Length: 187
Image (cartoon, rainbow, N blue to C red):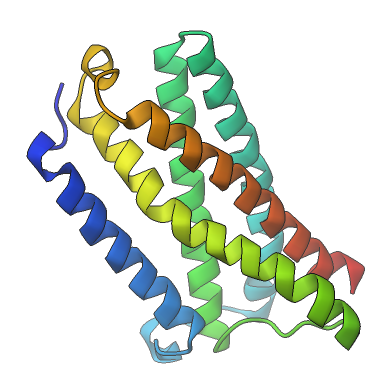
């Protein structure tokens, strides 16, 4: 069953990618006023990073499971795992962006300047770069899966794009956990 018009996969990928990245960069850059989101108690805002690390770890597991399922020819399990991964990513991003806007921007690094400069910033930069690169790849793979039946999907670049997206997604989620550990566990 075709859920996405096939001729619209590329344009929808572009529109969704640009819109998503615009919202992320606007929130991270403090361009979205705090008044646009409902106020939340401090305990809730402090809980978000801890919830997001659990979401990230769960997403790593579902991506790995989806990758394994498709290698074994279990298309239905692969589809469920990857849709679950996307749902987890959307939940993570919603909570992350909400916290960014509600608190007025990114959390400052509480550790020593040397760790900040030579460990935290490089890891954060790679994490962000991979997340940015992942967005259009994930959208493209997802939209292709919605536009073609499993039999037809083999004739598209879904598998190639999906492999790249999954690999980068796994690394990005993993580095996100390292960033969390540096911000909330190490310091």
